[in-house]
Image (cartoon, rainbow, N blue to C red):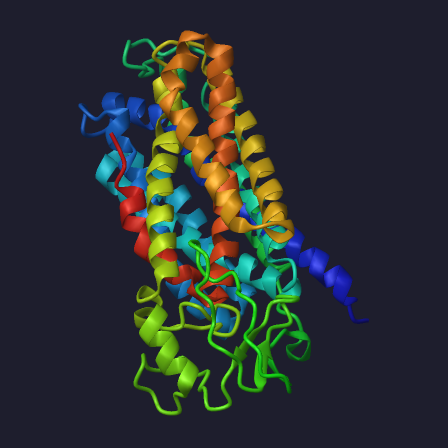
Length: 456
């Protein structure tokens, strides 16, 4: 018996949520970093490593994620989201479990297993659930992205589970710098990679098996529509700065089903193929004038659904998204990797810091849901402005929260993670509407190096 489309849509959303929940353990790295540094200083090499240096693991993972997202997008279009996600799941969970051996040898071996392998698997498994959900719910990009990415944000609840396993008796760090030396704590750190690697393998594979593309006939495609009136079209939401006025219509419109109400008139001679920059064959008035005035297809996000990398980087929309994601990424890296290390300087309660990390995961998840729905209902640009402004204010006043006590620091960290979730729910929607859905992996790979460069 065939599964009804509505049920299959719910299964895809649930499967994507589960996959991203496990991938979201990346956000729990800040809780794990002091444990890793403590073990290497006492039982591995190099003995002089610091928590700040171990954040290189997070940086390598983020770079690996960005690089493999391009491959993940390519595989998703050829073998489907299920097999692509399974491949990423095996690489990521395998890297985590191999870290049981790597951390005993050297930090540099750990950098390969828990950094490179983790990030490569994460990037492969990241793309499929989001692209699959958009195919099932093309009119609700923000909601579907926000729902699945709320699982990614919620993944930081692994912070509390990590601490309960590694430090069940709540031993405080013995050194002023925040490093643990108690044998009971150190002995549990390597085995934690085996335990949580197995958990990731089960959850990732379970979610991947629920992913499937909709029938080809049900997918949304642009369709031509005749318009007998020759009038200028209304402006469309094409870049983060606002769209320039489109050229006048000449009789034919191209409308995407997944953008209700959005339309852009195009010339009968206009070649909607994305091959070539401005010299491709078949280019009519709109192609030449639009490229001359505004850059290659920068004002046609709802018509052009696939851009070559060369065309993409020539648009203003890409530049704005690149800069915004890179700047936001450096702040996110600092928050995710160092919030516990910073808090340990004046809070000696390890369970309190782990609870703070897990609670911030709920705030991260809420930010993804709320801002994803906001992007559908209102305007993603307003959401981006609000989230970046609030996050900047919280970062600038974090020392004031420390002076007010650990309760206020708790609130500040939760607020920062809410902004993190909101930002990363808005970026896929902004990309899909500004440059086309298929360009998200390219943007992430270009933004990953500056995003990962922020470490102490």
